Length: 338
Image (cartoon, rainbow, N blue to C red; front, top):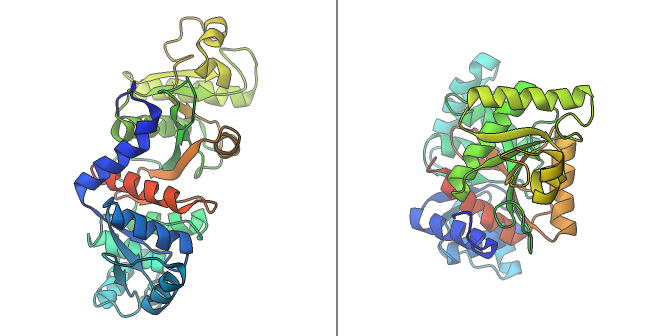
């Protein structure tokens, strides 16, 4: 998706790119009606091959009551699956240094989320989407314990793909917000890594040049506070780690987005007034802002998109709709290429 493309094409293009890759995505929340509906849509539209992990009796009964077709969808019974014993032993080997016993490993495999992570670890599937009913920690913890972070990545983080209707800012109304779902209070070094990782996601997922604004309640020294200092230091660190990255801060939200405001508050900045990647100073700001943007601006919010894992595992908002899950499946498919 080039930056000048109409925002209406963004999600369609992501889905179309996903279709061409023909990857397999596991959905562990087998008893959530939105997940079953999303599985049907993703299979019908050929976004991915879908595997539902869970009790086949419950899945079939619930699908029937919802009028959901399971045609083309594979059901993996995590209690009776042939490789289960192998997965238990493998999990034990992975975590025994952390004190996990073989008996505990067997108990962990009763969780469909842990089971899906072992399927991904053994390359049986290409990615996982979960979090419609599970909390974010219950999605992220197994991923970090089993899949772990990618080589060279110091910090896992998350971002939201925001598509804002009738918006002239960003990449024609398209933005990445980070971190809006994972790291509660990153220090300056962590914030710098979040910025760099999210910029990479913008390049890979959206095929745009990232223009990164490090957000604050201050613009270029308009306020003095230790919270402002953290953002300034993070910007400096990001510059040193990635000199070619188009990044600036500290910037207030209006200075980051609106050219006329940027000209007054941050004259000469190559980022101000042009940002398409917004980095928030903490999870309070990032999470509140994405939810307000989604509800007040009627934006589409896809995420949390987890960044920095060795293999793609993605979270969902528990307020998500079936189509949000389908879109997150498409994003997960694209992440298999990075």
